[in-house]
Length: 65
Image (cartoon, rainbow, N blue to C red; front, side, top):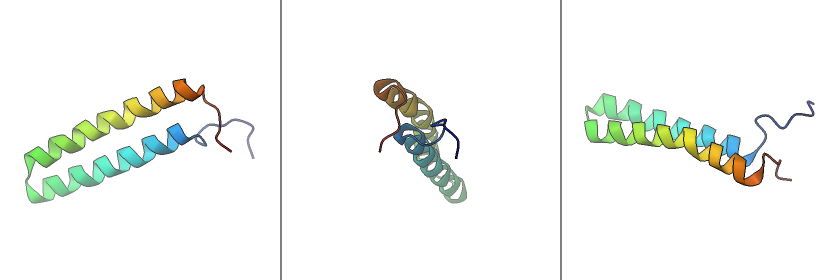
């Protein structure tokens, strides 16, 4: 196993979960032709990029044990 904590932090997993949910919402919104729901998915996608950065800086990139 690699000594690098790349992808093993709570911040990384939070980003993965948020982006996955955002894509699911966006896909459903396109299928249902619901533009409000689509833009909510886009907003969540943006948060999925910002929240892990903030979490990583707060925890200084430490791996949770």
